[in-house]
Picture 1 (tube, rainbow, N blue to C red):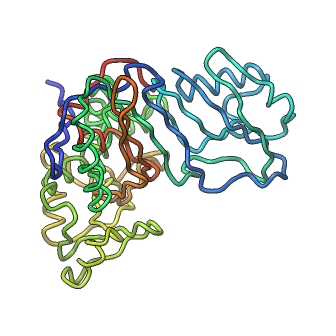
Picture 2 (picture 1 turned 120 degrees about the horizontal axis):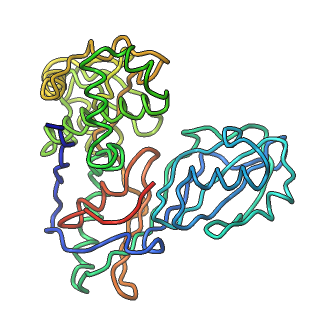
Picture 3 (picture 1 turned 180 degrees about the vertical axis):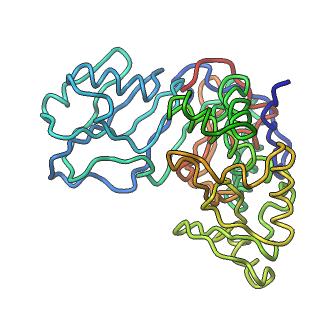
Length: 352
């Protein structure tokens, strides 16, 4: 029987969650990329600020490549954006005519701005994303609840769960990834496209991480001796030897406990934190050695914060519902916030 991904456990706020639906239309889910830096105006690379509607990032690149007669692999992006959404993001291409790029358009995308820069845009070259999400089927009295719980998340952080899309339809990526790690890894690698191989293994990493969050959900900001703490200002990680001394920094959301994205280059915690992570692996019938011999230098391993700051959080009543706005660091999922606000975050529709 296929193992289903763990259903994330909400942390819970001062007010009980309310009912609401999201992504009923692309306009209900707006995402703006928050760039790590802006194009300088000079250089051989042309950056396009693109708005897309109901279109995946990969489909956007395919259409841009067709119109410019270029290979899709020549384009640079900082991250993937939801398909069932209105999203705006930077896309780069080298040695292109800026005016020709400015005139690009399709049924589901439009180029809003074009600037030159000295280098290609790379995955991860962003600070985060800004969300504006309209929730349908809510009541006017839910506004006060949303405001109280968003304020709580702004003070204490949101559980940094990976979203459902990380695991593929019905958890298929997780099931395949576990089969790879429990079997002959190199034999699977020879039969599986490299991108797919990476996707299914990252699904396993994500499941391990989600299980560690769930195990620590009631004390998510509490540092343990032996924890590897994540600094939110620069992304570095340090060993916690004196938890009581470091806890005030965690209370200010300057640092947070980190969890595992297992791999041969990942640093291990010690003590109770290590025991929790070992239990999460054991529940999947895995041990750390399963990640030791991966080809292609995929899934090398890293630490990820168990919670993340929520910025610019606010809520307001709009026509037909309630809108919440917030920013999250890169690699974090809006469903992590919605899970803390709503009784259920399941939606039915296409995705990236």
